[in-house]
Length: 144
Image (cartoon, rainbow, N blue to C red; front, side, top):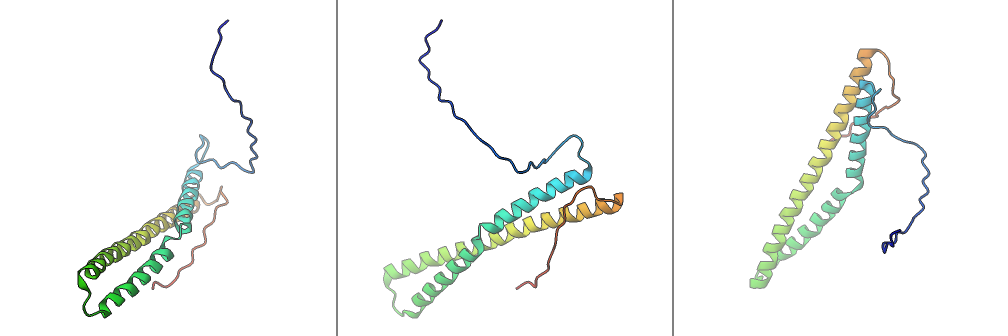
């Protein structure tokens, strides 16, 4: 018999599942696969929205714009203040680019989600029945 010097800790895990979501299964129909992809796209979209980066970036841009206006109101800035203004302007431009990137990411995810929904609707029309209970409500808002 061997004398082992390795000691293991044993942990007990309790799990309570309320439901299991299958993303793939051998008996899935094409509608089931598209429905699964739609659910993943919706999850990705809501995660991106819930990060709430757009309001934060807009607030940051407004604050930087006020600071840049203050620098512009001073006639003789001096070298150190001029350097600060240039640095702030670079950060301002970078933040505007980040805001545009964030808007683009959200739009891409929304378009993917909507296209999956249209694909699912077309499959349901072609087969003349629905085997899944997924629905998507789309509301159109005017673009500002």
